[in-house]
Image (cartoon, rainbow, N blue to C red; front, side, top):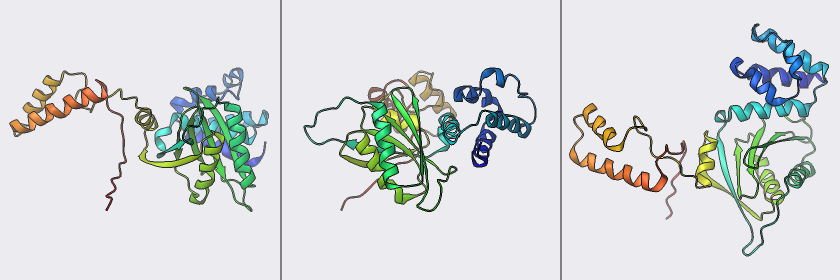
Length: 272
């Protein structure tokens, strides 16, 4: 196993919390369970990591294997990334094509490799017909930086893709082109949505409004919640109570009787 791959795997495993170690390693499915059973998971983390790296070396782990482990870690800790939303569209009147995931992956990777000599592209299929894509960018003279990748989550047969922060802004147009062409669309725009909560962004763009605005105790009836707030702060005047009732009533009617999707970023533009 190459030294750079060994270091990559080592750094990734060091990031994994001990409480999630076995779960993530099993999801990786690279090390057989009978080998994992020989490892002492109660020892110091540094020693544990060394044992796991030695097992990976004995199995000759490749860069593709290491990248897959990194994708799985990121799936478990997706909230550590800041996600943007891109919306694609077809030409007016254009028919919807039958989607082939393998064709999408092949086309996406070919577009990037035609433009960049040094780039690493990895895929992992996920639930709800989604695919997670990990891209490590390089340059004409430098190998891909495996420690600053960009992640893309694309849901097949939808016009939406979610991307993490891209350290090389100059590659954003190329990434957009690869997404557009591979998914059989003609145009792509970045939406004014950004959040660490990927599932909330998905709920918003797919209009899965399962939530209501959060209260101090979302399991309490609306009237009890309002009475509790009144008791906690006697300075709340009658007008505030009426407005509060109106806002929560409209929220429940619009979004349903569940917690509201969490959004951390909103941008307002004034058109003059």
